[in-house]
Length: 180
Image (cartoon, rainbow, N blue to C red; front, side, top):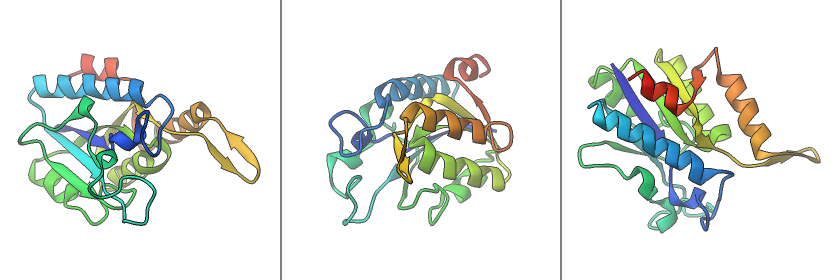
């Protein structure tokens, strides 16, 4: 059975948040479209919410920034898995919930592509889930290393390219919706 996994689509990643990502609004809107399609098809949906340690700079406990964004607000009955690490599986009951629901395929969307999305997709693959990643429903940010800067668009492209084929089928929301 197929399920939708929404990773960390939270207020701090949107304009005005503590860690605004490049094109987070557009990615959030695409995630919302996919969420609506899964709801209409009566397919399982799992939300993941990152709550950071109190000394972190964003997703702080009890702040508006840590709340799931209104574009993808969970409905009653849709599980919300709270995590404290990049992997949605580490020290959570996500795997147990997926197995109990008979899930073998995951459609994944979320934020940040280069961190929590990448880590979760790789872990899901290692746990034998067939993964589809909606690249247009993910967002990231620019990075720098060793005196070099990498634009958010290039970070996004590199991470999607690295995941595609080996760890997931990377595609877009319209293609996924058409196949539901």
